[in-house]
Length: 332
Picture: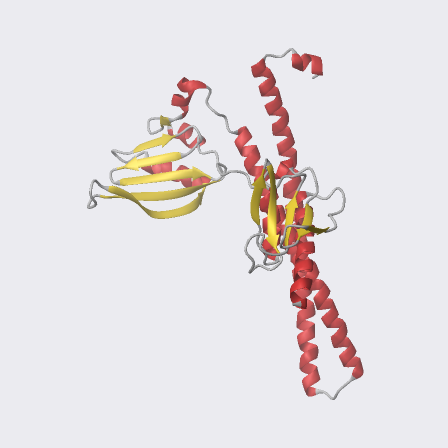
């Protein structure tokens, strides 16, 4: 569609066209995120397996040193294997951080696409049709309204002994779509039972003294770019808190985890002044700058290579911060 043709569309048509384009972009982002996550899982599996193998070999050599006379050749082997373990541990931790961040990026893309795909009611009349009692619908139609891959099912029970009666949670668990459809089929045959659905796709089963709430797994807010970095930092045993001022957001990581926020040397990390956008909006590499206890700028760590994905970017910066922090703390 040419820009002129797009400009001549009505407001509603332009909105729908932009929605279609955005849906296509998110679908592509989801496929890319899925492919990266699969690759990251495989890389982590390979590095972990190799580390286990070399560690087992090191233990074997250590055992030999206890039952054989000293040998320089055997000692050289042990030194070589210990160096391998050090390097493989670094590689494996990086792979684990990349996998953790890639998983967050995938979830963000999945939930963004689900939110955009989910049809919203237009106006009060349509909202009333969306939020309706399902019990009297044909069973095949009712089960088709179960759209998400899984649901969090919370069972509440009425405590009639309490003053005025009160609802309390009895159980909460995650179940697959097929189980939810089976539940609806079973409860639809029960007397004095109502099955309802709201405009967001949440389901409610109300029976005497029992209420079941079924929340689709795609209703959650998409994880942010900052969540991807937090996941990578967590692999290294570090935490980050979000802060903001004047529309600019960033993550803060204390060099010494015992310090109060900004109470000692710390890193401030952002992507073009942002740290809280959906993963798909991450369009600049993370910048991690070190500040001293007085808030004076010290230095900026090297960024990830140009063209890095958010998951790669997050794993790189998390590793760089961890290396710096480890060097500082071991010197104290």
